[in-house]
Length: 149
Ligand code: DQA
Image 1: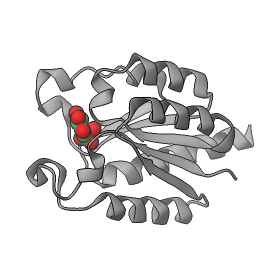
Image 2: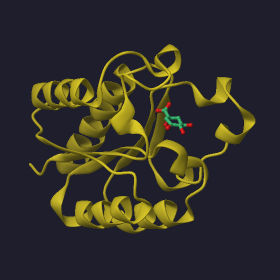
Image 3: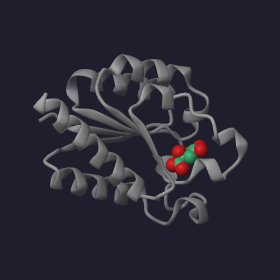
């Protein structure tokens, strides 16, 4: 089985330091460890990456088309701005789940719109690091159902 790509956008490298009241005290390394454990329990490996550069995320989504079973993506602020990520996810042709640590709908109005939501299977937000584990579980279910045909 190909790995699940877990892709992280801008400022998520600052996790643990950045607005802990909103994003918690876990670091991105902690998130990576939890994602790997959850995926492993479900029979998957993970490729876990972070970039502050939009085009790099686009390239990784393209790579995921052939190299992954599915994509969990926390695009950070690019969620609310990026047509390029929308288009890349449309082209990816593998299951994808949008993830957020915080409940973006409880926050500023500019976070209520997602450009990537229409290009993915579903959206999970508001559960802290558990959002990632839930996304991996959802992806594993979709991928397994697809395998069974
Ligand atoms: C975030 C929510 C976004 O609105 C914000 O720009 C982030 C993090 C989250 O995980 O809650 O960088 O994606």
